[in-house]
Each structure stands twice: as C-alpha cells, then as structure tokens.
Length: 483
Image 1 (cartoon, rainbow, N blue to C red):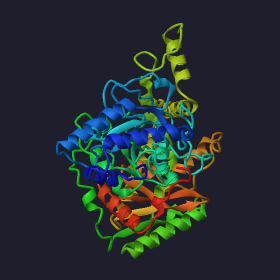
Image 2 (cartoon, rainbow, N blue to C red):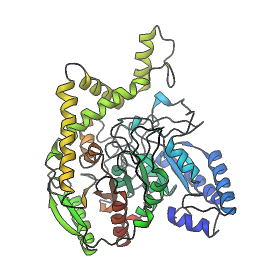
Image 3 (cartoon, rainbow, N blue to C red):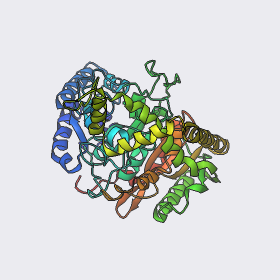
Image 4 (cartoon, rainbow, N blue to C red):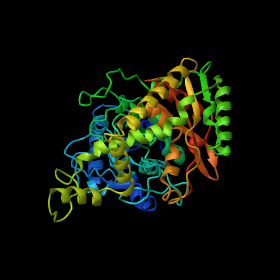
C-alpha cells in the first residue's frame, strides 16, 4: 500500500479495495518503523489521523466521493493545526499549540484528507538543507549522509521514502522545488496569492507560498485542487477562479514554446546536471514542443536582492516572538529588556538570528534606500525580464539546483555557499510566478530536478507538461533503496 500514489489511493478507496482506516494504520506503522532513520516528522498525530480516516470511510459509505477523501497526507510544521504543536522547527515555538487551523489545513480536512503528522523543517523556513531545525537535521532517503534540501525537507524526505503519498510544503525562495529536486519528487510553488497564507507562520510575507509535494504531477494536481482558492482572511489572496487541474493533464504539447535561458548554463552549474537538463529538453521536443534560447539578463542580481528582501521581511515578522504573548520565555528575567533579549537569544537558532540581524540592518534609517529600496527595484527588473520572455515562450525550463544534494554539514561553516544553491529558484518568488520541479535523472546516485516556470495562474500548464513528461520517462518511479 505504501507504494500507491494519491491517484491510485483514490481509485482503490472508490473500488473498496481497502479502507482509509486500513491504509492509515499501515502508513503510521511504517512511519514508526522507518522515520527514526530520517527524522522527517516533528509530531505524529495518530489519534487525529484515525478519527479522520474513520470519518472519511463513513462519508464514502454514504455515497460521497473525492480524490482526497480518505487520502493520507502530512503538513509542514508551519501550518497552524488546532490543538497540535506547530513549532516552525524552532525552540521558540516548541510549546506552542495552535488555537485554530490554517486555511490550507481546514480546506484539506474538509476535502477528507487524513493528517498523519507535522513534518520537520528548517527553523522558521530559513535554510536550504533542513539542518537548522531545533529537532535535528533531516536525512535524504537516497543517501542518509546527504541533505534532503530545505526548508520543506521533512515533507520531501517522508514522501520520497514512501512514508506517505503527498505532503504540503512552503516556498519562499525554492523551499518546495529544491527539496523536491534533491529527493526525486514533483513539487509545485503556485502563483503568489493562489494558496492562502492565513495560518501559515510567516517568514517573508511577499515571497511565501504554500504548495503540494508528491511523486507525480498528477498527485500535485489533486493536492493543489484542495489547497487553492480565494480566502477573505488573507489580504494577499487573489480572487481568481480555480480550474480543474486534473482535467488539463492530458493536453498535447504540440507547438508548446519552451524557453531555455542562456544564463542558466554558467560555470556554477554541475555539467552532469546540464546534460540531464538537455536530455529533458530532447524528450519534450519528441512530444512536439518547440525550443528557443532566451535571456533573463537580471538573473545575476537575484541572490543579493533576495537576501536583502527576505531577511528584511523576516526581521519584521519575527519581532512578534518576544517571550511575552506565546512561545518560549526565558527563566527568571531581571526586567523587560532582559526578557526580550534572552527569550529571543535562547529561542532562535543561529541561522534565524543571522537573518534577523541582516534584515534589521537593511531596514535601518541610514541604509533603507541603499539596500532594501534598491533590492525592490531589482525585483521589478527581474519581473520585467520574465514578462518579456513570456511574450516569446509559453514555459521556461532549466535546472532546479546547480548541484545534487550535498553531505550533511558540508556547508554549515559557509552560509553563502548554501544560499547559492537557490540561484535558479528564487527568481520565481521575487516575481510571484508559479514554478514546478520534476525528476530528471541521477548524478552519483542522487536525484536531479528540472524546473519549469510559467506565467501567472498557469499552474495547469506546468502540471500538463510535467505529466506528459512523466508518461514518457520513468525517473519519478524510482524508489530509494531500503524504502
């Protein structure tokens, strides 16, 4: 049962081959057996899962149907879940039980999805390796000595190891697509505003976006269907109709114009990954796509712009964690200033403290114009580059990451080296565009992903291309040894 995709589970439940309760028990036992190797979960929610599974079985017995009704999933541990610890991978929120459900959690629960638990993540979603978590690093199931990517590394490792078929993630600079690439999954970052951020603990509010992580594009379409939609509680949510993503999967790629930016193939890209990307291009050409070289001239400025904007927003968002209202509080504070300083100093890890300091500096009176304002202007130039490119092509294709997964601890002494791993993904967040990573092969036994970008609200186009690619390749079907 653990090898079944979401789509196969939906068919199996509809045909009464097994019940949601049976499936849930199998997967909970599998998590208990295998997750100690991976550390992909922070919290398991066995009681909730079995209650939801029984309710889903009852709904099916009463004639209800739905692709997510009775399907087991997990949530990245920054989606508030009522009565359940929502830690954001941080000591700061280790004792925090959310008083309400995030919109994404509520929507998926209403669709009948079964929540098995909350997955491990980089602290406050800050990281590219899932090594900054207060609960310890997550291991990559393809090689336990390597990182699974971040910050949604727990969701990625759990799905890749067949502990469950799909999970939610969030993407601020590539945190769905990069771990998907490093663990052989399909991961989708929707258009900014397509999925509600209400109840999703914020890192950088103008960049964060929730999305699905699964083994196939077909499964991502199913999960995104349940997540997407307008939310009046979220002022950045966009009131745009949600199409039937599954219905568009089988469209022909004949005549589809795919742009390949020349800037992607620079000295920083592992040549073996470049070869796999070119192989993917050839596969899509066989399906009728037309390939065109394009240029994104301002891509070179993306990393410095991102690492001003994101920390600036983080320093503002994380100011609420002060030891007063909720979360970690230091012991025996001498006065209010001591309470603030020690609660934050003891509650936040090194990477979070680093980004708060950078962000506060960039927003300070003497440097706001020189750094934050300049970064926002570059952001606009990057968006303009994409708009010009999409006048010529329908999809932009390239590598998701410049390198395969690196060894645990390899970049801990050099944060900038880890930041550079986001070079291909952060531009989509700066511009608010939808992006998808899909499996494209292996280097030294480690997975590699190819990234697709599309115009606003064209998630269906991304899923269509990925699905057609997956019908003609088998990379996404490979399973890590021992899982």
